[in-house]
Image (cartoon, rainbow, N blue to C red; front, side, top):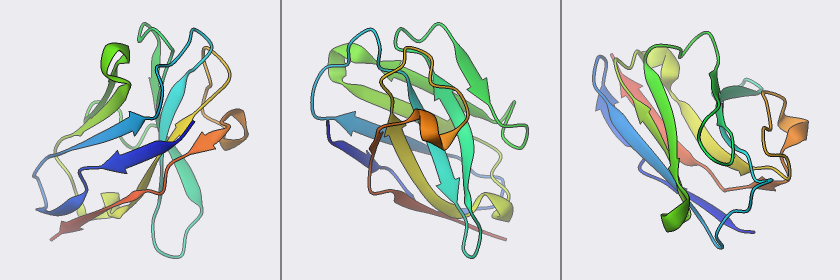
Length: 123
């Protein structure tokens, strides 16, 4: 499975951005997905996860209430709506696919990774 993240760009603090992650094939019932991000000089951190059917979602504390993860399996696409962005959200955002229905917050639970899309939030 190949994943391609898109939608990154430059946005002012307080603004919003929507990311997409297109998969090369339709997900099955054991394909949970998630978003991670890596800021300059830092490790890759968990952002959000969603179960294969979209019924279960989880978020990191830093984005909870501001970001919304969703997916449309008919379009082989996952989304991340990001609102009220502060400069600290600047990072490369990666989408990831799992062989588990609910992948969770650990990066080791994901098998497939996209190349990432850069989000820059200016102050």
